[in-house]
Image (cartoon, rainbow, N blue to C red; front, side, top):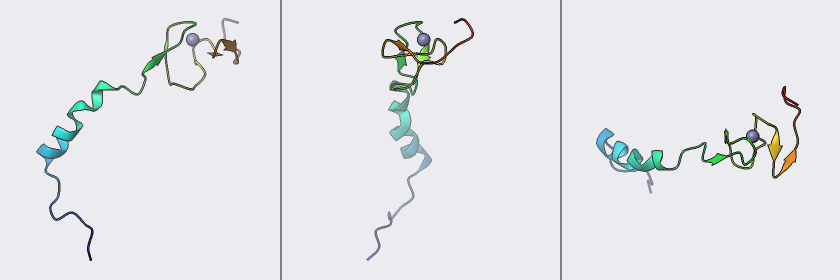
Length: 61
Ligand SMILES: [Zn+2]
């Protein structure tokens, strides 16, 4: 018994489904220390802080 979709999703339907994707950007959090965009649960690349502690040595340090 085949589980494949009977019809290919049209460009229109595919694009309609993706129309809301932009509402939650990948870079959704900001560093509380310097305000730069950072990936959540990642060390800030700008200042090296994560969860209130300095974990990386940056050029300004
Ligand atoms: Zn930062």
